Image (cartoon, rainbow, N blue to C red; front, side, top):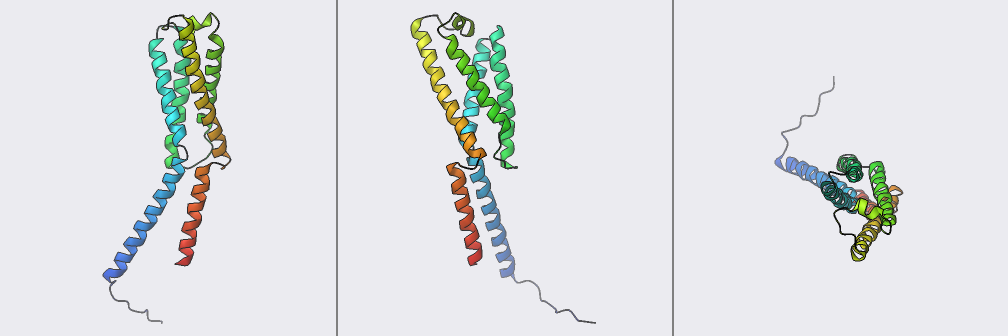
Length: 184
């Protein structure tokens, strides 16, 4: 029978070193998660912005059939928000509900822009006086929000194919971490 090598009690320095290694590993994992999560920051803010715009529109129009449009958009936005919250625990670059939400919102914006010079303007915007200057203000707001939607849709496409600048930073950071591990 072989006799095992007797080891003495662990030194406090060994425990301290193990704790430092564990802390550093957790710190690295958290910074990687944060970097992955931050890729979607614009998308999260845009989702919240349009959720509240639609909420405001639904509240104003609550006694009409038009309220169904923002309510439907808020439902899709809620699915997108849940999808985005899950990103912190389970990383993916394919945000299906977010794409559906932003594309649906863009389609609604285009329909609303087309309705501005028609009599549908008063149907969709019963809370706004039917004047030329008010129609122009609504058109400008819809154009601005559509620009945001186009930017967000482009960002979603870049993220889905890993061509966004945050992904490049993430991979550069990961390679630095890998090089540091190899040097130790």
